[in-house]
Image (cartoon, rainbow, N blue to C red):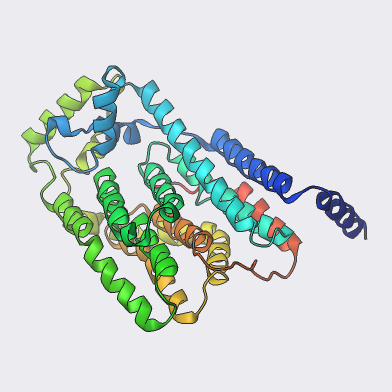
Length: 377
């Protein structure tokens, strides 16, 4: 009785504000929530900081774009652990801002309390802000920030340039890290299919053919990074690389972080198979409530079943990386992000998913906050 009266009074108070003021208030709540979660979980360690030391100035190697940019434009700070922490924090704030903007776009679909709570579930999820903050320095944050910027910029461009633009963005994402071919790039494809092609199966098939053509440069480039843009697999080469990177850094670099540039695909598969059962299932359990919410958001923004099937398949591509990479929380987190962002940028009218009650949504938010960020092994 008390809760229903309090809810009624709150709704009357809220209705007294204009839509513009409501929009600003909701965005501020979303962004403040993200910032508080960043402060709670922010952590940069030597393992991830070591990745910032690779640059194209020492030869073409995968995952070196961000290090190259720092070395080119801020050379005096290259190798500084303090600078890496600041750069990671700035990227996280930009990522949080973009995710808050995405959440605000979704909430404006019907401006209801369930819509607001659904976004809060995504933002407080162990898979989104908390995960990225706990893994600060991981290049996924920069990649997803770039993907969301691209999606915000797409409506400004003529439709005939969409695939060219996304193809260039995809190449940039692969330069950041070759695994981005399986993380935000399928999300970009899913959003273009929703926006630019008819909902009929023939239209979606035509869009998929165009996607294969325009994504082919990124696919080939990722294959090159996986096979040729690696260091020579020998003890002497490893010692030389360790010495070179340690010369740049004012912190102790981690051999395991360097070894990823020497390890081949077969070694990755063997290492992954040892950890899949326990850590993979545990990560999935912690993220599951948020994953279901993201799925419902994208389901309610999809016009027909065939289009939904294509979107789910594309957004779930990160799970395939579980066969060769043991960062299981990372892959499940990527699926959650993909489903949510695809639902927001679908281009179709959005209805808030039907829910049994707002208290159940609040319960999921509490679960997320208590669970905290999932961590990579």
